[in-house]
Image 1 (cartoon, rainbow, N blue to C red):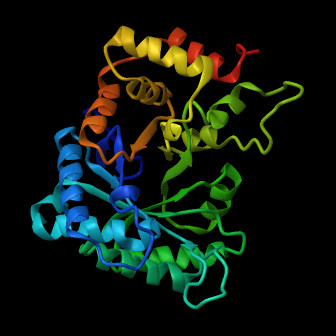
Image 2: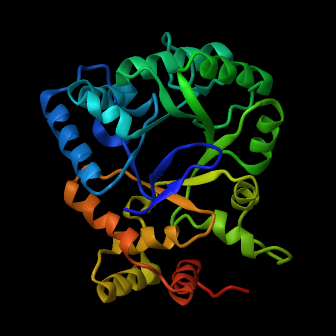
Image 3: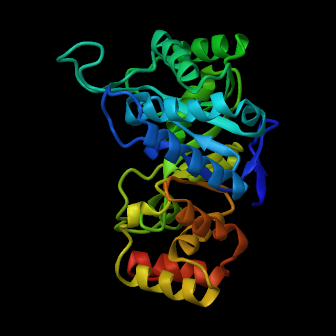
Length: 314
């Protein structure tokens, strides 16, 4: 697996990351099971065999159980911690927490961010996170309060680097005004099926632009050396029609799976883009990671974009 350096850090990571959301699929308060622990060991080992070094978490994934399962791996393999990059996200609060009747919401308050990190570290069984991301923008966030939480987390050695997820260019810019340290990652939904952050960059000065809320997010991240991570890079298998047919044709010609072609499409972008793959099947993970070994030509890349958009570029 080829590697890239996360800007403004000393972290060198695999071009493809592993997303730990589905280590547990039970979003309840029941204890983790022996079968879940066994499956987690297998998929983590498969990821390591492929050269993956960055593992992505969030405190809400399976209500914390995905982090607990990964923590079991670290407890039994303490040597692993120094070989990988651990990243987690916080800021989403589910309904009925901490008591029945309260709504789902976002919370970037200093108190919640500090408390969330304590829970993440406890579940993972580690003393520090390499990266903490703010999961989804909180309209009620006070950037100065976020900055204060970041300062405390770094001063205490609990978080080394910070970033965001699902943030627009303007939201990142506002936060950067207050945060006295680089924001190193923005994790967004991005795939051939969800190509809008890329397509908006070619629609400047066009009438009838179909993508509402254009943000210039990719260009902003490139300008400020913020690594773009792609969640749901395979769009959950939702790609259909001419684009799916073309991707399958290219896959057959290159001797790889369609998933590898779709990931290679993202890897071709110069942002750069780091796809986060979340399959729990070792064989599918291995097939997906072959994206790192193939390349798409400029013509193939644009052919896929045209197929999914239904027409060529302007």
